[in-house]
Length: 205
Length: 151
Image (tube, chains in turn purple, green):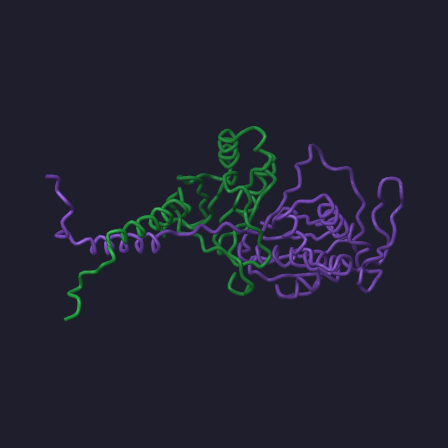
């Protein structure tokens, strides 16, 4: 005399309840943003670094004030101009590069810049300096960081296309899918050709 | 006369399917662990973003205005409380203690700051992180190409 499941209980409304719960979850869960601009901070030096003589022309000074105005080499610029200016500066190749081990520095054979003697010598010596004000908005700071990163990425892309027929991004993607030694060498080489040298002095009060 | 609505197909398994979908969503969505004591930071937009790897090794620092509009200035929140800039190192140490030794060097700090926040606060946090050798950081941003909304 076991009770059979009589079709008196309408199973159709169970589906409705389940759908409602599902829609509730779909609507209320927030997907946390998990992307951002990645940065590696420079290590803290124990004592003051022995004075490395840096030529003024090898430094691109970017200064931002609390009104979010950007000054590059004594000219007010817009954020959107920064990438072009940074690329021009880094890729200039007006002189010789940093010495590698025992070998003296060599001129840049992959640079496509103007070779202006008043701008940077070599991408390995090109320093970008970002001086902010404590009152600058974070949005502007991130935008500048983004444009600088974009400049390096585009230079690396161009070189990667020339040498390997693939963009730097594509190489990184490939490496993620399939980390081979040769890919790593190519990526590291591109990073060496355009190293990110960004310095941020103390913010203005 | 046609059928009175007595389906030959049993609908009793329909809620089973739906429950399975439901459980899938319940399990796969990331649950935010913290309730924000500050106003939800409006993240800026950037194009050169990288996804955070090893989500389990990410410590998040929120920076934004307090929910109470009368309190001015940027507040820093970690986990579930508001802290001062000088407490950031102890937060990072406690995060390191929770992870395995060999994972510590892969830890990243994600800074989720409101786009109106002052750069001074963020640079102070960066300085503190540098002092304790937590060198991998990520400025949390949404992916996009229109930078004009950032300021």
